[in-house]
Length: 115
Image (cartoon, rainbow, N blue to C red):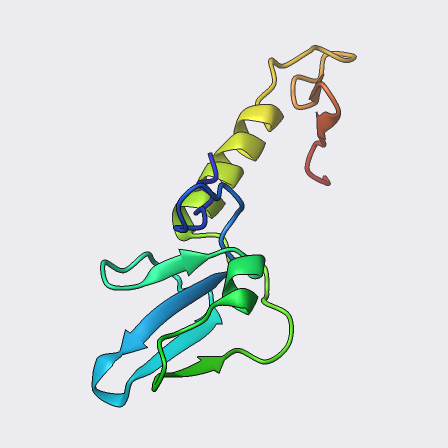
């Protein structure tokens, strides 16, 4: 099952597409593409909040230029997808002219290897 990270702004349930981090020594807020993993000292933001972010007077905002790319699935997500495909492909063998190497379940079909 794919876990979608949500915007961390209070009351917002939209999916996160950007990550906000602060460089306190430089008085800078950095808004970039969504980080691979959620970090304790960063904030996930939806596109609207990433674009509308304001900072205190004297601070600077560095923003990602262009559209925010869609998040890359984590290895766990890819493994879950592979497991789902394997499960969907699992078939009970159905005899066809004495051949037990083919079968069908749903829209997937097991094709016998070439001889």
